[in-house]
Length: 140
Image 1 (cartoon, rainbow, N blue to C red):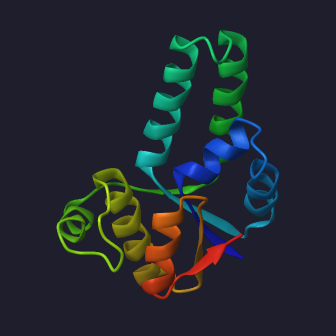
Image 2 (cartoon, helix red, strand yellow):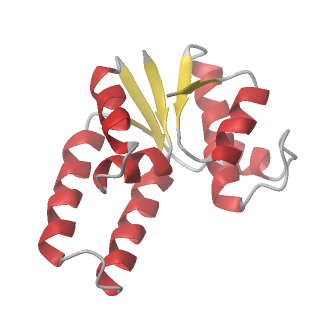
Image 3 (cartoon, rainbow, N blue to C red):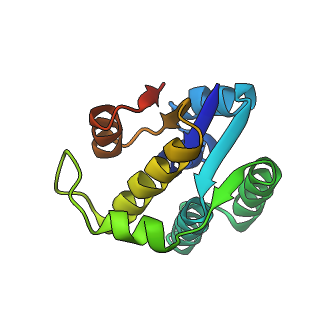
């Protein structure tokens, strides 16, 4: 199994959400994991927000950052390049799509052009719906 990991799934895993167990299992079983560099930025930002709102203790945030660093060190990370940005400016099958979500979808399509067997790992309904309509398998 080859995955494109989107931020909602990575956060669900790191934050111990109900769906996070499945995300962790799929990430561990994957032969390869692709991700946009945006994933790291979004996860870091979420951890900062949770700390600032006293929803996450600093020590817990450090543990989660370390887990992310260990896991993502093995991921194939795509940059937000000109090809991705060009695709972001075009319509997606299920609109409206927020900019950061469009970056994930455009990156996913870039990954598909190199690795057609990739499946999307996401819990975000709009991203999942778009991926399905674009012909990409969705997990879980």
